[in-house]
Length: 228
Image 1: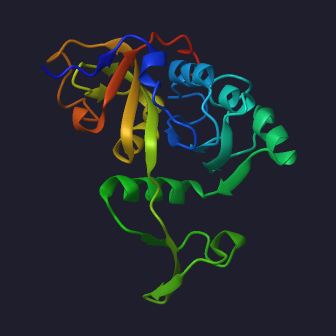
Image 2: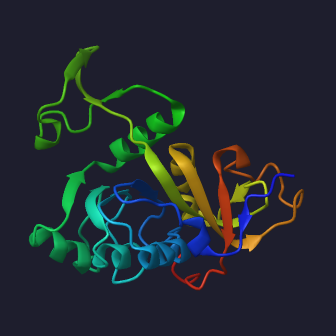
């Protein structure tokens, strides 16, 4: 019997090791797996590389993980905003590295990682510092930059519902990066707000099939006001 359900978030992240690369779902607070991130703070692995759209909000979730000293490097699109003071402070003090990736390139590189592609060419970033040291090539009179796929040891994602096989349904804008990250990691850990019985989910509503998910933890969404 296939059952990927776990009862504790701490159990789900127990094997996240020092030096691991993690993809963290979410567009700001929306779709961010807060319970899994809190469990990761308690586990306290070191020298992590995080791949996410943002670099944390206020001092919860991703920002809390950064503040705990677990993170060596951030790969993201939006490291600075009005409530991202934790990352800003760490970066200014030289305590965390940053690889800045345009948002479209971030999506495309994660998709490439999940699709098994070796590399992609994109026009975004050509002629800027973001293309420094990278291979470029002309296609039909336009210049493109070679970008490598992004993959991770673990993806920590958030869904609205999930069954014991790992089939996932998302809530509105909270869907964002979560589905493509589930495809690009060796081990995907899904935090769900509601546990669904097998066969209860409408197959047409399932965005992430269970083949891409290894663990499912149910944690009622205490941040529902932030994740619409």
